[in-house]
Length: 593
Image 1 (cartoon, one colour):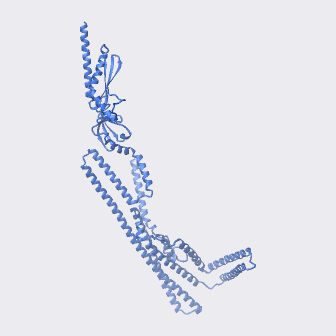
Image 2 (cartoon, rainbow, N blue to C red):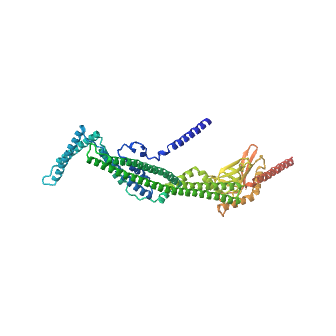
Image 3 (cartoon, rainbow, N blue to C red):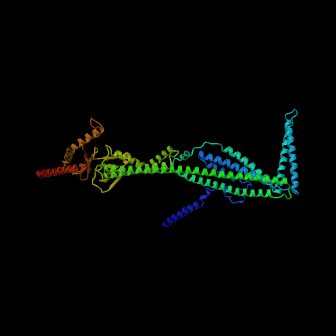
């Protein structure tokens, strides 16, 4: 078993350490933006798109991280700059694709001619459709079949034109069609984004930080802000890096412009050269604009990072407040515990009772302190009434004996209760009370009252719920009276019944005072002023035949603490009667002789 326990501890420790190491090694996976993983590829693109759209992808991914109105304003500025930068990137890509076109020859020229022919056909189909639409308002409108046929023809010719354009683009390496498709897809995505991200009111930085009312929420927000700052810092670094890359392209473009302006025209017209220079100048201006936009975007990200850092400090302030509240609760609990111990120390109580009360008070203070600390850390649960009800029901079921014992202690401490030193009988066990605690009562067992009545030496402990669910008798208070009995064997003879009458009279005289006192107390207990109709305290004599005469059983009332003395006195009286009877019988026999 020890080997299995050690193996379990070792395996658990290995799993725990391996998890910690894995968490540390993968700590950056939660913060790194997924579209930045392609950094370093050709053209600086993280996707397979022809146009680099990372500026917009960055702000689109970071937009949900803005929680305060100040952050949302900065996000809106970053969205505007990123949108402009991507639009300029598309414009630059289209102009560069236009400059890359070549003079068509061979199959490419044939496909180009087919494209021109299909464009004319599509134009002609569109004219027919417009004519049908105009004729629908006249006196002889066309049929629906004619209109549907015209629309279907336009669709077929457009599909054929698109296929021809794609084939021509593949043959010539023209990327304008693909760039245009990406632009169309982006415009559709932007429209959807604008619809989903309408202006929504947001709290201020202080209000957004104070939403976290618990220590757990504030610590979670603190770590969340750390991750947000890392993501924003990555976005800022990427914008700065993109700006540097564009500066390099800007310098290369300036060199191309200078080389084109100083070179002589060889094999191309002056008009073509000027057109090329004009395109290069436009691209140069676009790149210059993109550089400025990326720099501005980096500045906005920096301001956003500073804003989140300020909110980070606010959350840290709130965390310190929560920790201070916990410290204050613990301090108050310590002072209250010391005060309770001091007050209990000055009270004159039994040592056991004092220790019990001190333990209960300490546990109560600790429980209340724990609950208050948990409320500071986790807050009030959403279903607090339900939780309290279920917890109360569970505690009642589990600790019902202790709860009954606790309330039973108050009953035992009342007017008709018991005290240390009393002679009591609890659930059929008699003895002297040696301790009376908040939950338990201990007796020194003495046996049956009508039997021997001597201590057995055993200490019997009862939970105090017997005061509610069980029964107990206190023979040291109003319940100090009990029935005792003696048994005497009278030999058969001429004076047997005279002896029995004498015994009965003697017992009656010996217990007369106790019987009257018991009857008086019983009347007070029952509230009866005219005597007891159902109870009698007079001694009783029972006769039982025996082989050696008659067994006489006499029952009488006596005090619990005087039962042995009363019994001995009655026995002595009976012995005297028997001796006198024997002496009288002897004298009579002598006289007869």
